[in-house]
Image (cartoon, rainbow, N blue to C red; front, side):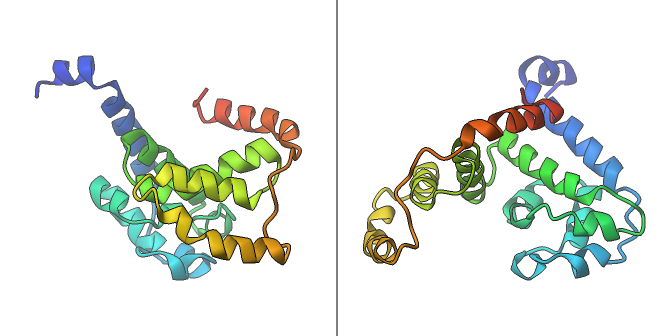
Length: 188
């Protein structure tokens, strides 16, 4: 494929390449000390350690990165960023990987929970379990009967007051915050 063809017909590819180049620049100074991995509270649940992830970014291993669910497990606690001896903005890199995965249409299953969670927070101001899980199953779309398997469990949890019927919430309060975050990330 010629370079002029890519520029004309693949603007998303160009954006992905730009984001990848920015990520490679951001983690280029990583000396592989492993402080990020040792500090991460969610590291136990990640299939690839953050330290390995930085190396994979340096080598441009995009497909392998998107096959993992490591960046979806990042809870944005900023521990890795605060403890990095090089002062790298590692939490921002994880957020950029999430954005890049969504642009690429990769990791649909992994991103479904993240998107359902964030949309629920934006709409209601807090997580409303029943609405979030309905949205999550709708976004996965891999098995339409899967939610029915959880109905008995949902009923038991509702009877014990662990799951609530969706209410109005205070989502309007957070909408300006989400709009500003989208603006800062260049998504609006």
